[in-house]
Structures are given as structure tokens and as C-alpha cells.
Length: 379
Image (cartoon, rainbow, N blue to C red; front, side):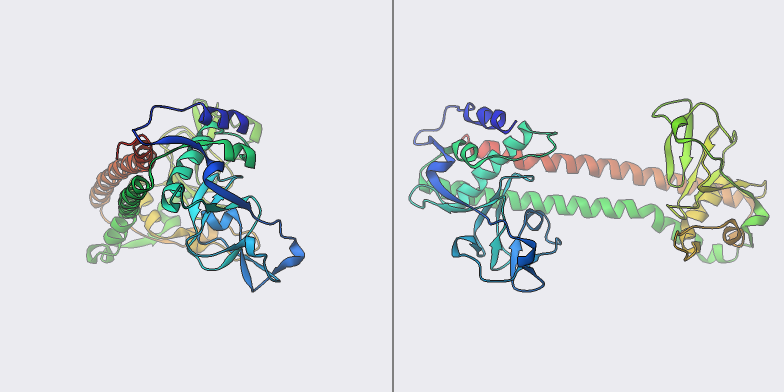
């Protein structure tokens, strides 16, 4: 599969601007593979060993070398690294002196032919195209001969510097836009919970009479359902501890119910809208006439029901603990007004989240589009 990918890249030659030419990656740099360190060489301190996990995530823990690394495997800030297995990408290292693990190249560019900044971006583009070719493979990798045979467009050195500078600026702007959209999305996702806290912590809510949950609800366990009777489609949704987990043919509850996660997702709050099967790792709440189902669900979502879980080896919530929960019970008209306002706010938050997720999708497509423009001379 990697052979097909690299053949596709080699065959994708296209007309280039005047003064540009096609070259092999192997013609513009030497690629030093990392070392396969043995577990008995690892230590809790020393020189950090760069694994692919450390390239992909700043939070990934390091292994350390118990000994002196060979000079060819040393890495310093600013070095260009390329992972040729699993992640298939290019990186500029900026986390201090380290030593290189296997499956990663340290790139020694021929400075009379290519600048490091340009090679970083053109290698990222090449690896992105390979990832697209081998999408879905269980293990993605490319051999060194295949990698060195990949052809890249090479402009004159001054043009390389100009392109790399523009890419640095534009990609930084993309990252700022992505970070801003992600922060906005997280804030939008937090809006419903913030609204519920504001409602149920308000001075008005503090004056509402309260009753035990067992006084306003009938509580029971869900029903056991064999795994083989849960399907991916069907007329009746199956609710587990954390919402819909599949479908089946017959309901065990025909009227709307509130579903509390009892085991696993302890305290998760969901509600059925009609006939449903509710599994036995839940507590099922059937509100009586004095309490509105949507209002009760909103309160339970604000009440951190998960804090009622036991401290046993397998965390769970018991009916006995839930029964003692104090629930506000204002006039039914106030309950319905509160529930309607909550539904409107929830809808607004969901629409905002959808818009921000669409915006993030557009932003996430920008780097590939910018790189395509760069390497046809369109920047």
C-alpha cells in the first residue's frame, strides 16, 4: 500500500513556475533513522528519548536514555524530524536536547539546495498526500527508499525562503483561528450547565418548597435485555446508563421516563420521549402529577447526581441514595415556564455549537489548501 502511495506521488508531476524543478527528497537531504532502544536502556532521568508519541502530543511522557547517545542520534531545538511510521508527518523539534527513537528520521538538509523551513513544509505536504493514499490502513509506514524517491517541487533558494515565511505566517493565523473557535465551542457547550446553575441557585429558586425525590417520583430499575436483542436499527430505542445504546423491537416502558445512570456512567441524566427499553444498569424515574418531567430532568442535570455514587470497588448509585435527594417543587406553571426557557436556551446553544463545529471543519481544511497553493507557485 505504501508503494501505491509513493507511486501516486511520483506520478503527480505537474507544470511548475519558471525556475522551479522537480527533485527527489533523497537528493536534497540525508535522513538519519533513530535507534531502537532496549527497555534495559531506559531510565527515569537522563536524555529524553523522542518517540512518535512525543511528536504528536506535548503531554506524552518521555522514556530516558541510561547512557550516552551516539552523536548521529542527538536532537537539538530547531532540528527537522520526520516520522515514517504511524503518524507520517514532519516536525520541528522545540523541546530541548534529546535522542531519537526508531521510526523517525533526523533530516540533514543540503543547504546549498534547500532551506530547512521550505523542506519542512514541502515534506509535510508530501506526508499528508501519503496519509490520504493509505487512509484506513491498520499500520501506515513508508520505507526509506520509497520516502527518498518522492518528488517535490524545488524553487530557487530565495523563493524557498519567501514561501516558508508566508507559510509560517498563514499557518500561525490558522492556528489562532482554530484555537479561538475551539475555545468558543467549549464555552458554547458549557452554556446549558451554566444556565441551569443560574436557575436553580437563584434567589427565587431558594424560596421554592422542596420534597424528597421519592415523594414526587416512582422509582424502579430498568429491565435486563440480552445483548443479542440490541440492534443498530429498529422501532424502539434502548437506553443504557449514558443514553441510547441501540434499538430493539419491543418496549418495556411506554410512557416518557427519566433515566439515571446507576452503574458505569453514574448519575448521567437522560429522558425517553415515548416507548423505549431501559436497561437494568439504570434507575427509572416516573414523575407524579405535581412535577413536570422536563423540569425534573433539568434539576437533576444541575444537581450532580453522580456525587451520590458509592465508594465501592464498582462505583454505583443506589435507589436509596437517589430517593433522599431534595427536589424543588414550585407551582407547576413555574416548572413549565422554567423548562420551556431551558429548552429554548438548550436549542440556542446547540445551534451555536453546530455553527462553530462547521467553522472548525472549514478551518481544519485550510492548511492543506494553503500548502497546495504554495507548491504550485500561487503564494
